[in-house]
Image (cartoon, rainbow, N blue to C red):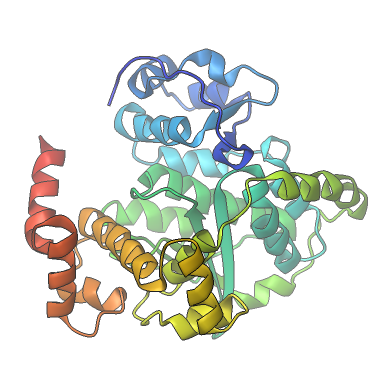
Length: 346
């Protein structure tokens, strides 16, 4: 994965990811050979030296994959997440931590995160659980494991800091094969579910009503106008982006019908199909794309068998999934997994 230095790119605002200028010093304090990581990622140190340093999404993921491959201990992501100081968080997190309640904080965090970078956050309250997911716009590959660990550890740390008391999740669901279970359990102090459909942090929904000891209306009032302006200036969401995101949120054993997705987007199925047709695509094409991306991630990252993956993607039977996957990749799901793992091992 190592290579030459990446040339700066000029993508849309939402395709940049802000990084604290102290991040390299923080990693050094954790025992990371930063120069080795940067060489492996192909990123110049100067990319981190601006007062408001930003990486492209491509650079950001290259950096995290390098950390995972040559950064050192397997608990590095957890240690990074629990070591983030309040003043070192991005502006969306600052607005969140100064909100009235934890629910308000998560709502602000979800609203403004995409103005900061191409990451979306969803918080769904179901059966007394607050289920928190992170989704990167236009990122098809599985997320680096350390990035997921850091994100979840950082969010739990932020929530505990906000309410002024320890926060223990109900469970952590990970779209990866079983590994490091003892380490993860020690960090989150809750059940860890592997081979999940998506990476998901699950909190007690009752926590959402807890007031924040860090709340400060003056700080929120100062930050909100700039965040709203950044949100307005961010690269506009297309209807296809909205449909894909809605479909991905439902890939947990539910058949994501066009009626359900249209209802979620506030329009009739006929209107949705017509507008997608005007964009030279269709609901079925977007559903197939989302299923293909999800199936590749689950086959690569988990030990779920083909039948379980077919269920999660909303296929009515295994044969339907197998035929669809063979049409996408030219191989059966299990053969594709075997070949993928062989390439990764080589």
